[in-house]
Length: 278
Image (tube, rainbow, N blue to C red; front, side, top):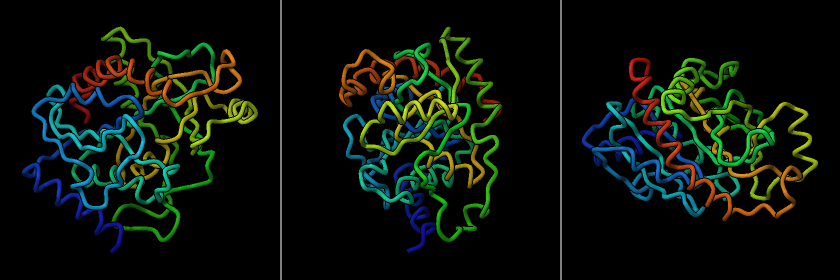
């Protein structure tokens, strides 16, 4: 079965469950951020287990559910959690859910994640809008034969994170009085946290935050011509920059969940601000 057929099977299952609902905006919720889905109204929820080909996340706080509904007046599709490469999933499986969002009708997707800050001034508790990324992994979801039904062989990533969507996010943050940092996100595939030496290397390359997701999805979406925005919830200072306490995933989840309300306010304001450009 080709990947295009896998995606079409997923679209047909979603259509059957949601009576042909067509979202315009996709949102992917990262670690600890599932409560953001509560801002969506008129909802239809579909378990990933009921969508052919959707990998099921094994990480706590990733619900493994697609929520369809409206955010403000915008029809949205929210992926409540994602699968990760470190769980043993192939990249083609990791990006299948966002490719499905594109085929459902999403022309823009906001990717969110929990991340460690490489800039002490951008402390835990802050939101950071992603302006660009660094792929430290050496992996790419487009490796292998190209799928021309999805996109061209070679894609320009100069504006991987769409300038207009970023402007709308900045305006929305100002409207709701949120202090939105900006920076470059580095993908480190995990599951081990980074060493202090690696963090120093990332800083020298221009990274401002580091995490274990988002980049493959961004590449796959840009391949399909979908506009992308990204937001990191800063849950900790990266290795070697904090108090010396051991980095702990449970702590990341707790701090991420504490920022879910803040992120929900931003996403709701963004839906109001950007409705004419989505």
